[in-house]
Amino acid sequence: MEPRCYNSLAEASALPAQPLHLAIGMFDGVHLGHHAVIEAAVHSARRCGGISAVLTFWPHPRRLFNPDDSVRLIMAPALKTRQLFKLGVDVVIMQPFDRAFAGIEAEALLPHILRALPGLATIYVGENWRFGRGRRGDIHLLVAEAKKLGVNVVSAERINQNGEPISSTRIRGYLEEGRMEEANALLGYTYFAEGVVIPGKQLGRTIGFPTLNVSWEPDLRPRLGVYAVSVSGGKSAGTLPAVANYGLRPTVENSTAPRLEVHVLATSCPFDVGDSLTVEWLSFLRPEQKFPDVEALRLQIAKDREDALAWFAR
Image 1: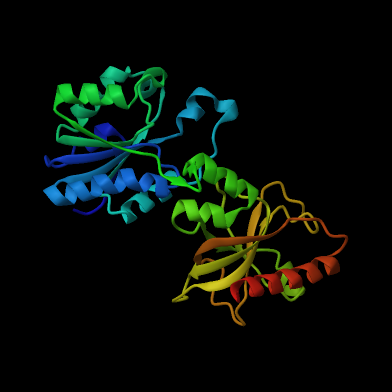
Image 2: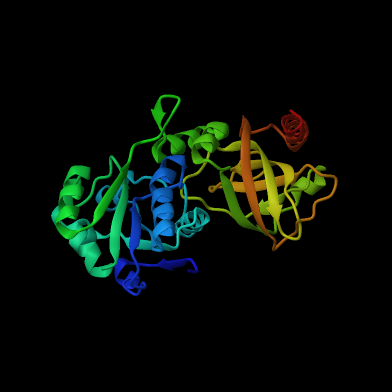
């Protein structure tokens, strides 16, 4: 079937009456630790001719219960949906996490899901998944309640890397510290930004290093600084090496919100204003800093370019 996205469980009640294999979780970042849960649902659905689906949530539950200390997310909902489809998921259900949904008692959650999804055959979760009002439900309660309703439960153990669980929290920490190699290893793909090239002040052109200003406003901001990146999109058929600055431009502007500027290392740049680009973040080169004047900035950018070239030549 063609991949479909529904904005609530109620909307998803329109699904065909086929056995439904449903993975449930926040799945922020869709990292390697999530794959065991999601891919189990996908493979089982394909094996028995059923539908694979993911039930996920927006916003993050912590934003509802603790808005002053809300978690910053690696991925926006639309991007998460795309990543889930890449794993072969047939259906994504983006359930609003509001007070009504949060108030469902643990024992009542599965019947609530079944009313919307009567074809539900198997639920797939991580072994540490908590659910229901006050997060009282755990895997043992889920299995007990599912047996009463004729639903199977598959739980996946946490996946470790270097002795520590792979988690969205761990990845967020790596991104905020600029530890891109570690973050990418846990994600299972290269962290990326997507945005449209917008007009800039063209200072880079005047000092010999033209840049592309990419419109990008992530929920979770990576560490400010200079990175080795690769760029694709626009009219280019491939991926090009580049160096990027993500920061406040303190030497020339000191803006209040970080901006993503990309300098393509090739002799010619095939990208222009209006192009949609994907920027993959490969390695952190240095933190952002303020220089005494534009000439000092120019000299540092020249060094950044050489450092990026050296990184790609490894």
